[in-house]
Amino acid sequence: MLVADDHPIVRQGLRLLLSATREFELVGEAASGAEAITLTASLAPDVVILDLIMPGMDGVTAIHGLLQAAPHVRVLILTSFTDDEKLLAALQAGAAGCIIKDSNPDDLLGAIRAVARGESALHPLVARRLLQRLQHPAPPPPAPLDALTGRERDVLRCVGQGLTNQQIADELHISIRTVHTHIRSLLDKLHLEHRTQLALFAHNQRIS
Image (cartoon, rainbow, N blue to C red; front, top):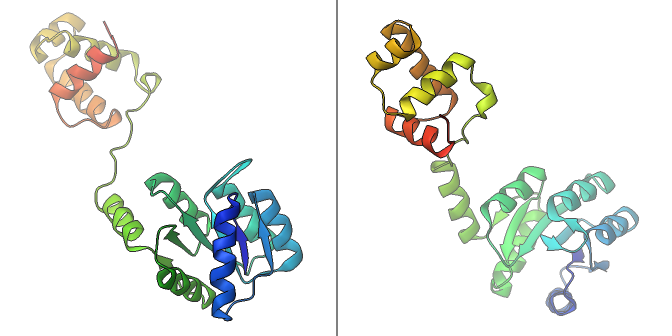
């Protein structure tokens, strides 16, 4: 077992907890991601308990480095926050689980045992937040304006000015059917659902 956390008091608490159980052998401690990678390469621990936020190297980079140094190693994230993006990125990078720092000792030991057995371990709060994230994904960002054709930009400008489809057709000297086609294309490219959103987008982007 290797512990990587930049706070000495956290490392001390984990050291005492692990030694009290006599179930795990603590082979090393690190105060940064880079140090954790170096120690993992030389000590080959079975499990690394890793703080997600440490100076000098972000958690995702540290996880990649740990798995390169020792492909068999199991990484358990120990964190005091539940930022969805960072936690999801850590799990995608190869972390075997995540536990919150204010968890009770039994939950922490249970998570360590689980990842040591090759299983996954997620704190209930983390699991709930990630499940909500998967069930209600954030909408994709609008496409950049340079993804639009010149004619689409013309139509978007007209929509932003509040013109009707017929007025747009007259303004641009195109058929009303072509206007419909361009509007559908704009909605698809900009990931918008209806004309009002399109008009607001044009206004916010100051397209005139």
